[in-house]
Amino acid sequence: MIVRLICLLLTYLFSVSVQATTKIVWSIQDEWPPYVIESGELKGIAYEIVSEAFAEQGYEIKHTKKPWSRALREVMTQRYDIALTVWKSSDRLEYLDFSDAYLINSLVFVTLNTHSFRYTGLESLAGKRVGVLRGYAYDDAFLSSDDFDRMDADDLATNVKKLRVGRIDALVADRAFFLWFLKRNDLDINDFSLIDEPLSENPLYIAISRDHPKKKIILSAFNAGLRALQSSGRINTILEKYE
Image 1: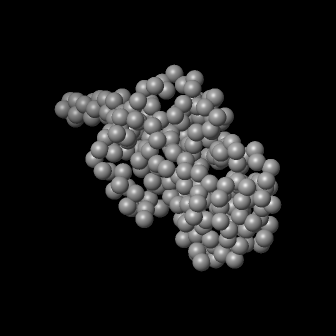
Image 2: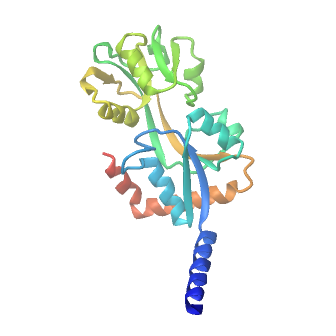
């Protein structure tokens, strides 16, 4: 009996020790396939890179799904430590600090195949109705231009519907996200035209509140883990899973 109690005590102490040495980072993000995926075996390119980078430094990610605009607010108020997939903007630099970049997003214009055009700059959007998503950090020049109309929507699905019925002339989307959306919704890519010249190429970061007391520790841990993944070739292995 005494031996059993000793064994149970040792097991408990070992469990407590493991929990104490495992450092937790609380993350928040909306679903954004193929970068963050909430169902199925695949967890998303960004999620895998971020979680493995932290794991390299002895951290574990505890993740929560929330709408994007709310996710940023919860990071800003420090209810969560980090947002997983963030672009820099002049506005966000006022209240967020950023990691090293770990991916590049290509923002492209999408039209119906019968209404394609050549993008040569914002002036080539003159007179067009362009579908955008609320809460996204588009380029300042794009947001301030009077050459075209920006039509807000809460998600890509809404903008695709608007495009198909002629309520907008084009939409802006991350290239990989749009292609993933087509596959998952059984839509024919031949019905659409992805304009070759991108609106922008946006580095992707994790972000943390500038007032977070552990921001330097958390960002330093991620950056060190990211360098290890880059050196080992692990990031390329992760990317290949989603091709």
